[in-house]
Length: 60
Length: 313
Image 1: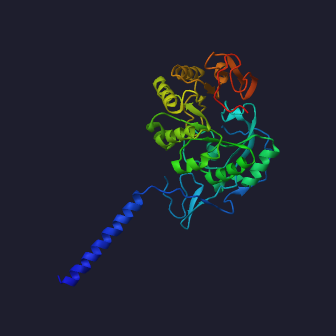
Image 2: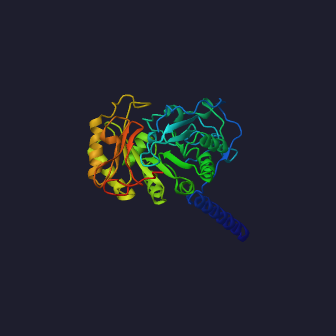
Image 3: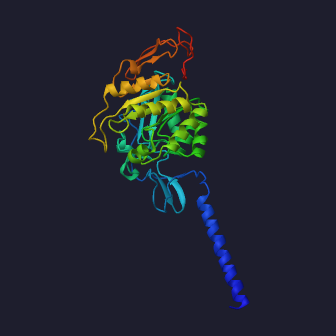
């Protein structure tokens, strides 16, 4: 192997190690809280507001 | 934590990755909007006898096999019918109905977090109190942010083992316990609910361990509600919880030093009432969600003067 090729290999290996380390560090780092953005249109169907004074049938 | 691929939703079904951006499809679109008695949450130590405007969207980040609200908690947003009610409209509805408080409930406010947060912030500005009814399955950072606008919470402690949470709820125990501790430490009023399911979490030693955990980590003054299970969703093969089991749970919790222990979903004369932990006199008598009498004086026992944990006005 020539010196030039050796240096190229060294740079490639070093880059791969750095890229791998960054990827691992990103994976290991605690996730930051991300606020979700609201969508404009609801994917299901809309209805009008009914009488809210009646107790809900749901628990809680 | 969900890792959501583009075009997919998280476990809750309502938070979606669209082109690398996290979106909530339920913001401003509740599937349920009603005025309930506050005792239904259940909250027994917060503004008793008042009506609370209660909302929910579809979805949930847990998948409890016994969920009594599974028709909305496990629903897909595209299959559900909702109303359009942005935060400003919710707050004005609350004002028009003369409700003192707003509850984010039925499914879990954690999955409609942004809607809860924005509404709670607005409501606080208008002097309306905010109540969460939640399973508490949330990370610390968003929980701390939200708690700043919350006045009270009923948080489920569904079981006292990780195995129970994994098998029955598709979750884990530790985040819930941490959320409970953080909620109490933040100064909001906290009440805890445990649903007793026959054969799964109804052993005396489990109730004892749960009660000890509440006493040690949240304080003996923290109200604990033992709720009776009714066969629902994927647990229709189990029997409903007996009154005897619930009464035993209550006795155990009281013997472990908890001051206020209640029985829910099943009629129980003593289990519905609030008694002074000092002199044992009857303070608040209830029948279902109705207050029959409230003897509290300035938040204290009228007989021995002991201060009673709660927000009474």
